[in-house]
View (cartoon, rainbow, N blue to C red):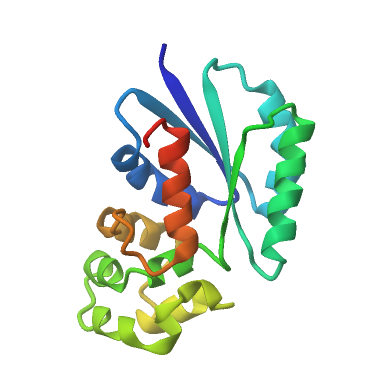
Length: 188
């Protein structure tokens, strides 16, 4: 019987990213569905109902949300509690610290190739890019670095094919997200 990974995301740019990387991470026998919301408030408001109403058998749930300015542990615990209220005790919650764009800043080679801008990957040794999860303003940093070329959905579409999924990304939250997908997809 086939399995399905259902990923709830707070915005379309995350869906765009995942449409590219999930097929590369999941085994072929595991399908996936990505459900975008209109921001984190919408995700949190509708999450219980979406999980309760999900009818596809053999589905596992993963929730992805930006940390933004919240406390990572509190955000994660709140989302886990919403999943428990929906009757799902084995959902996986992953937080992009602080924003999804930190995942791109963790792989400047992918940004350079995806946006076709030379000289960006050489900046990966700069202190602020060694641990991009610490950046409170990753989206702004990415726009500055790309001289305004990066746009959320289009940038996600262009960068995603080049992201290194082998564990070399400098964003710890991206690596944890990929590891979580592998676990939920039945990959050791």
